[in-house]
Amino acid sequence: MGTAESGRQLTDSTRLMYSADMAAFTAWCASVGRRPLPATPETVTEYVAHLTVTPSPQTGRPLALGSINRILTAVRAAHRADALPAPETEGARKVLSGYRKRLTAAKGRAEARAARPPRAGPSAPDALREMLATLDQDTLIGKRDAALLLLGYACTAHVSELVSLDQADAVETNAGLLVTLYRRPLKRHEKVAVPYGPTPATCPVWAVRALLAALNAKGRTDGPLFVRIDRHDRITPPMTHHALSVRAPSGRVTPTVAAATVTRAAMLAGFEGQWTGHSLRRGFDTAARRASRET
Image (tube, rainbow, N blue to C red; front, side):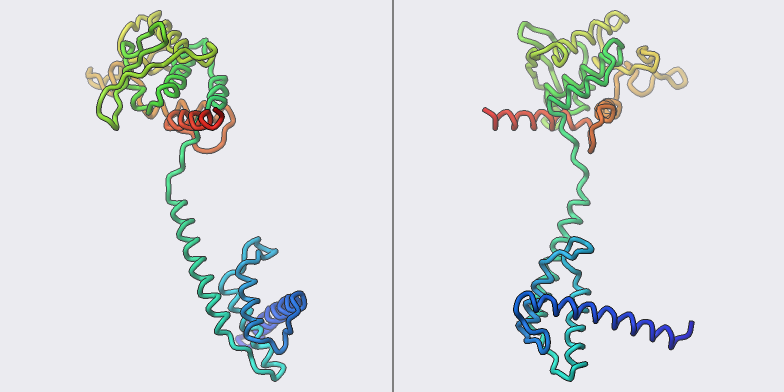
């Protein structure tokens, strides 16, 4: 394709865009009782202001700066084509300057939001019940995961705090459980009273009791409360390398495994969004705020 032909096509394309821009300007002028030719500077300024706040039918958003600048050029070109003086655009340029600042600020806010890590979805009581329904609590791993979910929710615990619990750290009393947690942010131990739940299905005390009974039946009467379990529902033996124990020789689960338990239960329950170990803490806060609004 020759250069002359390419230039002619570009000129024709620009002419068509200018024609469409002028037709839209003329229609707007008719709707507000303005004269498109010759247009006053005030009319052009008002039209530009209109374009910066009116969603485009194609995108649902106001036009981009480049498109509005092209429209200004089209209006001035139409005046020159009719041997009319082109309207001044000083007022319109001031409107566009303010529009440019708004767009820049909005882009900055959007980039800041995109840069933030996704927040973990809260496991509020209803969601927690649906997550528990995905577990087979006749199995050891189902009992472990139910206790982890319910105790983590009741204690507003990080998964790293949960997996550090030993059996001796969860003592049943007449009022429920007395759990001794090591709060890592505070760098100290804290005793948390966990009351009985309204129903056995969602009661953290019943869940921990069932887990302890299952562990004791397999000869685990002390050590970690939450242990690794294989796909055959057996407690995973200690891992060794050259006869030396490696990676939590007591069989304690890692925070990664505990967090994956929350994610897997949320996925099986059909929840959308980001569900992590932190969802247990956020779920308690969500439920507490909701309860305070309802009372």
